[in-house]
Length: 126
Image: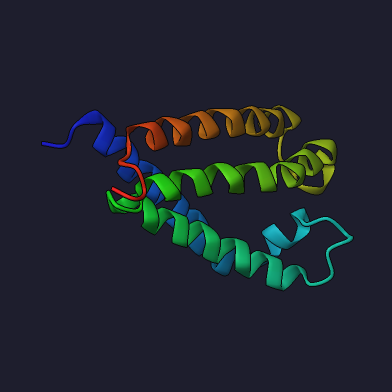
């Protein structure tokens, strides 16, 4: 039987792998999020999707779990401006402003979750 911490890690890994795959299935949704000053939105979407898949895979293995969790934290910080942009322009998304606000708050929960996984994981050099 899986322990709650193991289940939590596998759930997070699945979440990021699925989110990364979704960047390739529905790229137009993600392209709308990207700031106008970035020149190649298609490339940014693909790279962020690959990053999410890679980080999800890193979470699956005990030897790479800590680096994967730190990577998730960095990714969540990096995409936070895009989520702020969404919350500031809810009319572009046909999503309730309350849901977009909740999504911003969820970022902090996800960061905390990844941090807890990083603390429970073995050190990278172990």
